[in-house]
Image 1 (cartoon, rainbow over the protein chains, first blue to last red):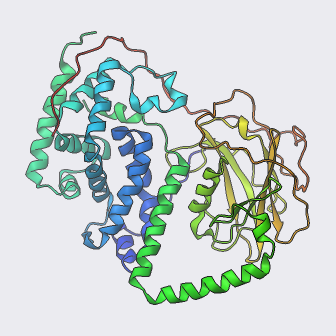
Image 2: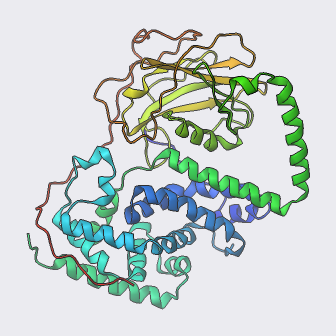
Image 3: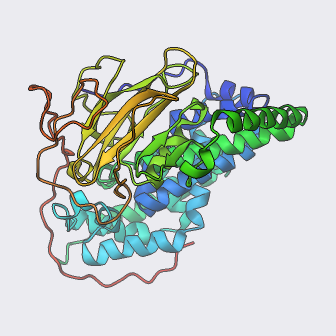
Length: 190
Length: 271
């Protein structure tokens, strides 16, 4: 049996607009997007911090909802941007995890998940190289690359979500892709 | 490169439904606070309602001080006889109720109520691993009779990655309560009662289970849940045939182990 996913009948912008009068309406935004935000955060900072940061993301969003551009019906890029900014506050922890994965092959994210640790104690070589490459990116490059790859956001959505110019999105993405591609194409030391 | 990035993300374990419920409850609380800040006049109305409710509770529960030593805002009460009584009159914060289950060590996730109001009874919705959508992945029991549902299960036989999902049923307003009781090391039962019901409590001890790191996945089968109405603890194993829920394990691919060679740790600072 597959889980039923409710299809939103009103846009995120309408929900946010309604929440300006009835704040409790904002919870609908959590119901729609919390899972994908949490999954994005979980890969970046680990499952348990991700659940904390998910709550923080929506609290920040709630406090800033009166500044939301209501002409944008989909709030997901905005939420991703808030989440990414929160990840930056844990940048050291994120980089430490990526380096650990690159060095040892043990994924700290999965290591906390008791049911999978025995089956997935080591990562593939390509994953280790990817983690090492991600650790070497700047925080801005990492944000753009991972959001483009995982959240499937357009350049315009990335720019709006991260609050950076469109040209910066393009240049960061180009640099990040080049760095990661080069790292993945390096001959393996294994 | 895109494939590697996609695979990298696919390994993320599913969310903890209770942690997510806790996050949502925090948001709801913040929203309620914002509402009061915007509509100051509601503060007075709310305060008056609280006073009225408190007075009503004093009359309705004259012995509350002696038998509810650990009362909580959501009505989860540890009774002196070892039972746990749960009153769910405020289903606008079902996440808060879940949070209390979590704090009490009970591995139960109450889903959203069907409608606003009070709980009349609960039905077993399924035992399933948590999944990214926060809903049961498998329903192992058909919806039982909404009256007199009794849920029996062994919390120590629910694997650590699985949760018992319970659907709150709402049929009519009224003074109802749900009582959760357990036999130490034997079984748990959850059934609806009228407030003031004279059904005696049972001297059971609520175990501390959910959320404790000591929980280990069990390879033993789940105890068969019973759908028969009961006011007595059901003997372990005396359940109707055909209601044995399968243990659903997460379907996760396993990678081939890679070499354990250590590569030099990058030292490039990140921006």
